[in-house]
Image (cartoon, rainbow, N blue to C red; front, side):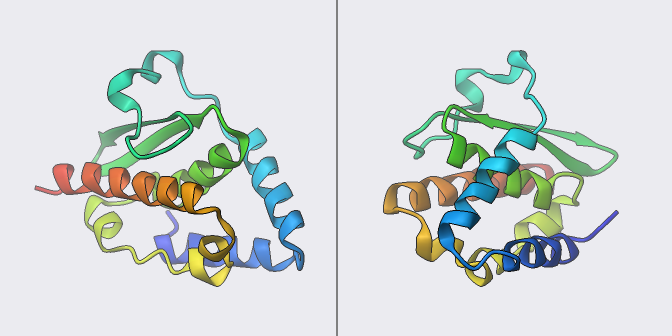
Length: 138
């Protein structure tokens, strides 16, 4: 299993292939299309992330001491953002998730190029993932 840092490096390499931010947004759209379909049974109010303008569902489950995530959104760019987070965090140990700095978000320029609303939503998604990890790391 790859570490969080190894996955972040892969993502940085993928985004470095694009010079223009419109191309990077297009890549986020591609990621959203490639995201696995979240099972409908998990699209509940309990799994909605608070603080996102669009609707974002996040489901976590623990298997053999690792956290696995499913996510979806009704907004295509947001679905791409949550797909990146699921890719980074799914299958990781809760302690590693809690400690993750997510430097790749700044390295690829994502934080600087998101609207304030999307940026707040991204932070809410990260917070929720880390809350799950904290709860399961006890």
